[in-house]
Structure formats: C-alpha cells, structure tokens
Length: 480
Ligand code: 5GP
Ligand code: MG
Image (cartoon, rainbow, N blue to C red; front, side, top):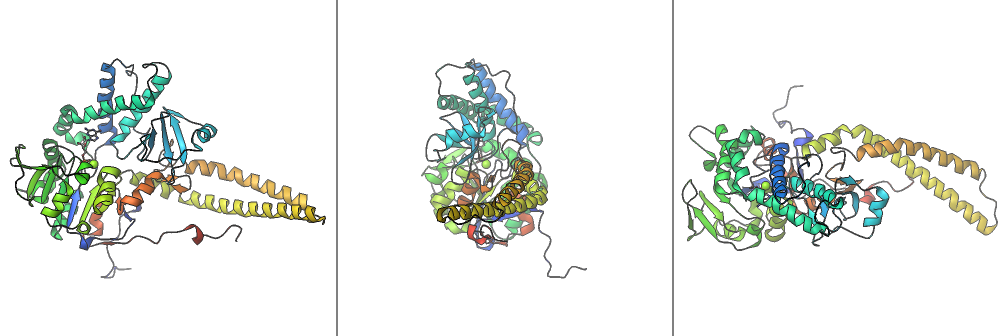
C-alpha cells in the first residue's frame, strides 16, 4: 500500500527507542545540556575499561599486592549493581532494596546463604555501607574490588584489612588512573581505537540547532581531552570550515559534577584554544567556554528556567539525580546497555508468554489446592464428611503442579540470565523492577541507549509517558 502523506517516518527498532517516565515536550526546551563521556562519546567499554583496569592493577602491584595474575572481564559486572562494603559482596537489589542476587568476591553466593545474609537488610544508598555502580566507568573498579576480596580472603593481603579499607585502596588506584594524564593522552592520540563511531550524532545535534535550541556541553573532563574527543566524534561530519565549537553554544569543562549542581564553585573563562584561563568577571555568555562554575549561575546568567533545560548524561547520580532533585531540570539518561537488554527481552518474548501462561496456571492450581484444603479443615471442624474424592483430587493437583514446575524451572532460570549470565537484566530483579530501574524512574524523565536516537523523533517530539500498570490492573488470583 502506498504511504499516505500523513504517515510519519518509521520509528527506530525497539532497542533504539526513547522511553519515557515523565512526559517531556521537546518544544518547550530552550537549552539542551550534554555530558560528554559515555554520553556524546561512547567508548568501547571492553577497551577503555581494560586500560583503566590494567593501570589501576599496576598501581596496586607497585604497592606489593599480588595482583599480577588478575585479568579483566568486561562481563563480570553490570550497571546498577551495588557494592556491599561491610561484607565484601556485590549485590543486585529490587526496587525496594531487597537483595535478589549476590556475589562474594568473584563467587556466587547460594540462595540460602544469601537469604541468611540479607533477610533483615535492605539496600539504602544513604548509608555508607553501599556503593552504587552509577556509570560504565564503575565496572573496572567493581571487578578489581571483587578480585581483591578473593585475595584478602585467601590471606594474600594484609590480615585484618576490612573490606571497606580494601575498597578505599582500590578506589584510590582507579581514581588515580582517571586523574593522571597518561591514559587520556593515549586515548586522545588514538581515539578511533577507543570510541564507537556514531554517524547519526552530528545530524542529531544539528537538527536541535536548526530547531533553535541552545546546545551546552557540561563535562567533568578537562579542556584538552574534551577538545580532542569532541573534535574526533564531530568535526569530520560537520560542513567544511566548521567545528564542534560552532555547534555548541556553551562549554563547561572540569565541571566537577555533582558539585556543579550542588555548590557555588566559581567559573573561569577559557580565553584561548590551548586552555588559558582568566577569572570570570562578568555573567556567563553564549559562545564561551568555561572551567568549573555551577548550575545556578548558569541558569541566572543565561536567563534559563529549570523547565526549559534538558540535561542528558550517563551518570545516574552526578548527571540526572542531582540535577533533577535540586534544580528540577528535565533529565534524560543514556544507557548504552539498553540495546542489548531490549534485544534480549525481545528474543525471549515467546518464552516469556509461555512462562506467564504457566505461572497463571500454577496460581490457579494452587488456589484450587488451598480451597480443597480449607474445605477439608472446615468439614473436620464440624464433623461433616470430607469432599468426595478429596484424596484423588489432592494428589491430581499435586502431580499437575509438579509437572508445571518442571516446565517453569528452565524458563525461569533462562529469564534470570538474559543479557548477562551472572546478573540477568539490568532493569529487573526477578519479576520486579531492579534498584537501577527505580533510580532511573525517579530521576530520569526519559532514557535511551544513545543521543542519536533522537534523530528519528525530531526536536519537536512530544514524549509521552505510557499509562503504567498497577497490580490491581491484573486479573485477581484464581480468575479464568
Ligand atoms: P563526563 O562523563 O562528565 O563527560 O566526564 C567524566 C570524566 O570523569 C572523564 O574524564 C573520566 O575520566 C572522569 N572520571 C570518571 N571516573 C572517575 C574517577 O573515579 N576519578 C576521577 N578522578 N575521574 C573520573
Ligand atoms: Mg559521562
């Protein structure tokens, strides 16, 4: 059938869609702020994190730690897991903070033991015990910590060291790797090795400009690295004679998020391409680049109100949590792993239907079993005769339930290993939402796997939140 003129272009495939928690009309956004690393610039996690890991490992080796044999594994940890500093564990929790899977060091904790450890404990990120893995930069740190927990348990590190002290040392080593220039210099010299190209990024940003939006870059990376990476991902795709600097109306580097959103740090103006600074003496202006500063000053100087600013980043705490919580900016989270997650969910769709049908049947049979049992007890209490064929009915139900469980078990275990064999889906803990999903729905108005997914939606899109389902929307127990 020929397309009618009012047929819109097709939406992207499911894994490239934009998902909405709170309705967001892009027409009412005047300025779009972007984080850089893992937002505008997507690294090959396997390579970037391996380099970060190796450098941090070498730092620990220089301290005399026996870490020479440790190896990087990009699949060991996923975004949204939580480190338990008290017990040296890595856990996945549900939206309510119930631990649903746990590893001690690099070993899975069996279900019974996990229950013993956590039946009275809820994950609460306001306690110093827990460290949430907010960004892909956390993966190498969490892996190295888990591996060092194994070493400590085997008596190969200073006896008496607590897991919390151990974490501090590992954290310090990873922090140093990021802060030292060597890794960044290696990446900036060879960006194509580290960066995943995205030919749709430049057209997406240009569309936003065509639609009259101001574009802002607010990154924690420092100026020379930012220039190298932004130039690498954008310049070649822009009209000749222009650079990424003309695309962005404002740049803030070394922003020190989350402090950028929380504090009153002063800004310095960058006055030359090689990064010469001078204290800012007048209000922030479009077309300038700054080091540091703070979000309130940005709003005031550029005359923007909170609901006119959309900030897009990949760090759940530093980019979207604080900007939403404190300033009420509109927020979008970039979660690259979503592509794998959505594809895994799609490929399991038929089996998921089978599983849901089997679970509904199980619920129905269990209800019949309960009804039979209470009828017997009532009869016994009044001295009446038990239901006819009670025992036959009871054992028939038992057999059917056993047969159902045999069908359910492999499907349920497959569902628990989707996307990552150790941890399963990022966004789910069993049938519930994961802690990550809860954080995400609280603080991110929208989420998607990459900035360029916006290209197909256009800068005028009205992103509507779907009607959410509530437990009472479902059929009650025992209904057909
Ligand atoms: P953004 O995501 O704001 O664009 O920039 C992230 C920057 O923070 C990158 O330059 C990255 O290397 C740096 N970064 C990420 N994790 C750490 C860390 O643990 N310590 C330090 N010092 N820098 C970090
Ligand atoms: Mg980032």
